[in-house]
Image (cartoon, rainbow, N blue to C red; front, side):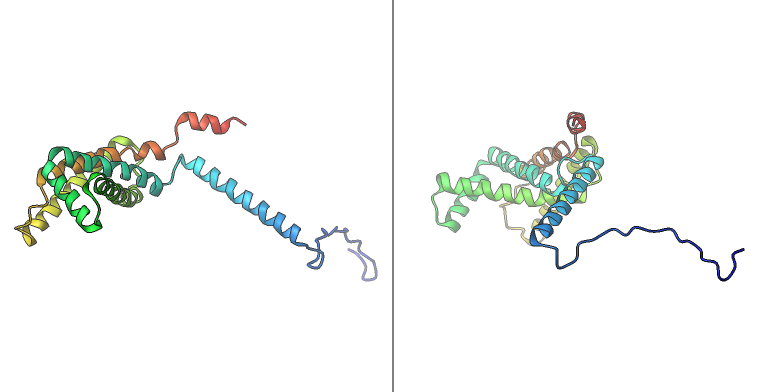
Length: 200
């Protein structure tokens, strides 16, 4: 037990020298922010790689939804020529443009934009379905069911309206469902991608 007057040696601790605020320049701050940005990007890539995702659900769903919208519109145009011509004529009157080819191009753009918004929304809702067969089964049930509900609303509130044909719309929903289900191929990372990322 040490005496009261005895001096107890303390270990010397070396303090790290930090630059003062006065000595910090704009170049130092820019370098520090760039370093933080690179670190955040590495963390984001690492997290996406660990989750097995190639694309986020929203952009992947928007891309496949746009293709699905075009496929649905094409199936309706092939199955019901009169319905497609009425759609082209209506767009031509609204936009005050000729039917061919401007109205047809506008109709395709509207179909692609509608499909992209629907595909992006449902891709976020089904982000946990990562396999093709379950997602295809889900889409083949949900999208035609939505069309049936839309036809029921039309029969109830607009009984004299004949612009919604059941057969072409159901075929369009099936075409959209099949094409949109390919979203899993854009989202899931393949084994080749994993090997390529592991190679330094």
